[in-house]
Length: 351
Image (tube, rainbow, N blue to C red; front, side, top):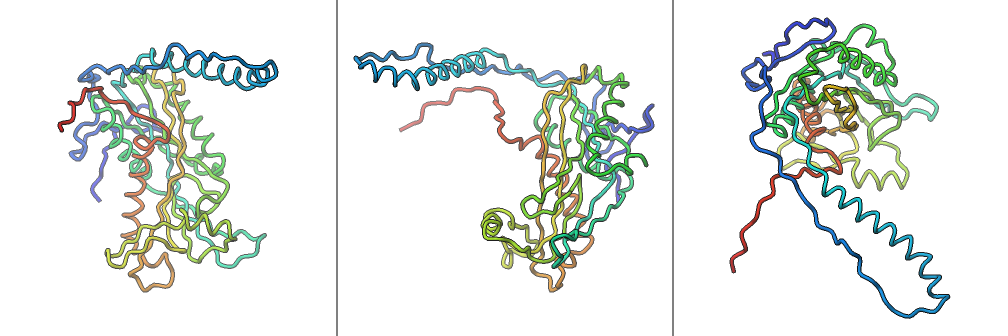
């Protein structure tokens, strides 16, 4: 396989730095920050400055009853208007000119397969861990993050970093890996003089989820593969939930034979967290977690086991594409956010 990144040696042996030297990614990092092409437009919102006054004659009892609910509602409305006016007067932050991306996904790939027909007190899953050589998981994450940040901040200089896993990291329990990795990241960044040149640092670390989630197994962590070889035993409420969302799948067959749902599937998952730090102070700007997965089948195959319906090459390609896409969605598909672009006046419609 042709290498996608060439990592250069760094004074800290536990961390590799990539400077975008490969032809496929020509605009990785420039030594000097790139100035934004235009200033950020400020967006002002309008809100009424004076509430309408209500007049009328009310009896004493009606007036007391009215004030019991009207005054708290009026106070809440005034507070909302005040906060809206304060928000409107707050200037839009300038986009970062220099960004570092630190992928700390580790090298442990988790494999989980559900057992058929186990008793309630017996572990219903087979669990395995595989070590991915060559920082493969981190490089997948970097590719997705590079695509997202290059699109969102086209004038910013990007620096790619990976936190190389150690034997100590591999010995940490999955439920403790997030805290352990965060400590390693902060210890590394505190002694890194280059961060004085960065406006923001995007750090990607693994997450651990105890419970089953939308048809996925329990106790999943980081990046891995979940196999559902048999239909689950669901009660009526769970069946309604599964019909609504759980069993939507990606079918690798031709369009004529594609299925939209399936009770058995293989599913690569991406349970990760992105933390945005201030480059100078290392203060947390925001932190978001993702529990993404993609259920895959091949209904054209005659194999009885759903895992055997995909060749190793097909499965490896699907996992790689999914991880890159999930890493990209951490930036471009943030829930509950609105990206405000330049304000422009549209011409009046012609009749």
